[in-house]
Image (cartoon, rainbow, N blue to C red):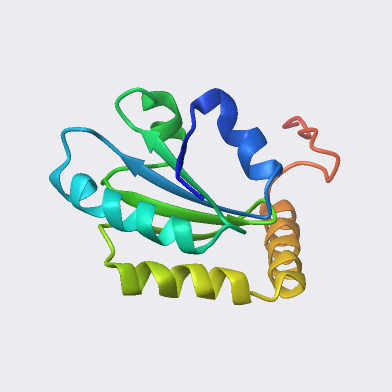
Length: 138
């Protein structure tokens, strides 16, 4: 499958509507991004069960900021709506294949349980009530 360019407007629905999504944050002026592009495209052809997307950080500055992109290229991988990998820097084809294989091999029941525990811990540590309302200072 070829890579798909996505925008900020499409980002959430793309992540929510697909099992495994890889996102390459890049820019036209970025030399390492241009080197990584053909590798990313070639690996995408070998994995039709994975959606390989690209986000142009120049055109989608708000999305890049929301995603915390501070260096490009940055590769993110989502599985079942969970961010399971994020790393700046260009990868070679073997490294990218390893990422794809690792994402496919994840025990998602374990991942979802871990995410739920993190949310519970964050909620317990946050001031205020469990329903999200703040208790006013006396």
